[in-house]
Amino acid sequence: MTFSEKLKYLRKEKEISQEELAKVIHVTRQSVSKWETGTAYPDMEKMKILSDFYKISLDDLMNTENVIIGGYQQEVVEEDDQEDLEENLNVGGFVIGIGLGVVTGNFLLGTAGGLIGLGLPYLIRSFRKIR
Image 1: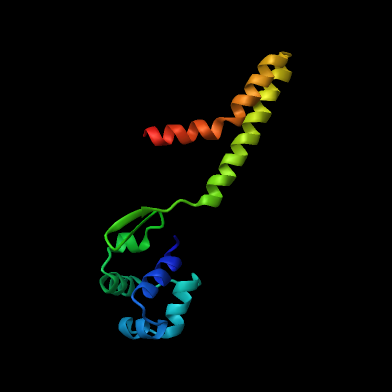
Image 2: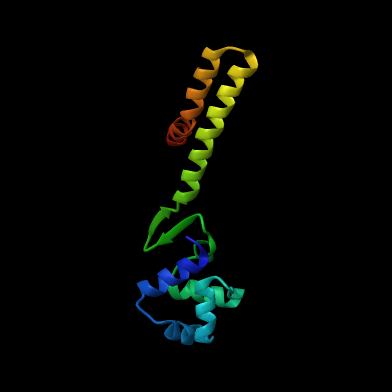
């Protein structure tokens, strides 16, 4: 969750408008809108006011990796990035495996390497769960 998405989420959770939030922070509604669209960022003084208003730490407010809202921590996983990584690992592993077979002149080794390459995302996912 990006900073701008988090601001918008928190504001909607409190069921207040951009204008109401702007009054609390002593800025214009346009400033709040720019923060929520990611075209601008509040200065540190305003960040502190936001942090106090939403009752979350500055670190949680600014951190894009983990979100702590309502006392619960949620790890944010960029699913599109994960899918792209897995697809690239599949293709790359397969190509490297087949390339190894061509270079060594061993068809069996190339086939085995290609199949292992296709399984790389599953191996990596398993190792992550173990940690």
